[in-house]
Length: 424
Image 1: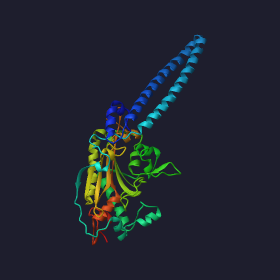
Image 2: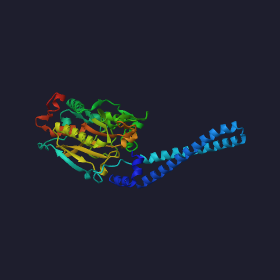
Image 3: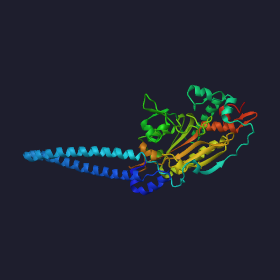
Image 4: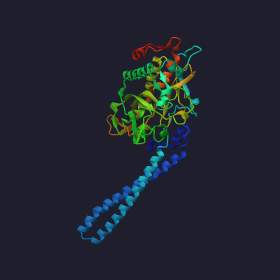
């Protein structure tokens, strides 16, 4: 959530920067500034009347001691009137604060100045690419056919058990999933991240704090009997570990990693790249989450990008990194890099990771601050996260790119985890 300080200091800049996200904020900002001025005036009036009330309270005792009963009674009447006025001011102040909050949560995060304009993914900017595109034999199969051929993925039974978008991994396919999870976690721990295992459901406060509510409510699965949501990503519970926390500057950066299943309704995406593992409702993912000092959060972002890039290199997958344009940037992000890997049988680039800096946007909702060394004052921290990595499309690319007449080759970096070099 943007802070009032950001908006007060330069509302014109806020409007201009949000235009990069194709968001017209002019009307909302005008209403926010008007409400903020009213709120501050109400607070000033309430404080002044409270001071007057306190003064009258002290005077009454003196008037009674001086036997000035009539004056004391008039002072009492004045106190009653002041109490009612203060009560009314506080009631309106509470309403104004709620109205202000309701408007503030509708504003997206400001994009970083480097974010290019654009309407959607077609306007994203490629930063770099690596690896070589594999040349497959003419009879090469897409991963959903390979999964069936080698007994790795059973889409039909997954559909029977739950529905479309809930694949059942079997045999060596299940072992490949387990191997990738362990590989990604071990790489994260070796890079200095602390492993945590969070709950798979969160409450509304947690979903609000990281920006899933109210922006992405339709994308989450909500329980009917309890006010909980199935997590769309480990980002939500892991970042919320630090909700309402004040850290010391010496504790930064805070670096956590977590493996979790993720659950997404993918509402509105039916018919778009839905074959096989390209778009599913339940999937496994290892997430990296960082909290850092605002002065170095963009160096942290580059380090996180380098970590994800190292993973796809070790898996020998051809990849490209793109910077998202304003129209493709999420509600909460200030800057995001997407990683895409090439699935050779489909001849498609598949997104497998997003690495983002949210600056202070999530921290403001989280009330996550840090105390600078030698200072009593606190500042909002910066939060960042990235997929390292999401499994379904990684598996799709691994199966398609490494197929041959002999079977499917396992990249050497994974062999210590799978226990096998080939799927036959």
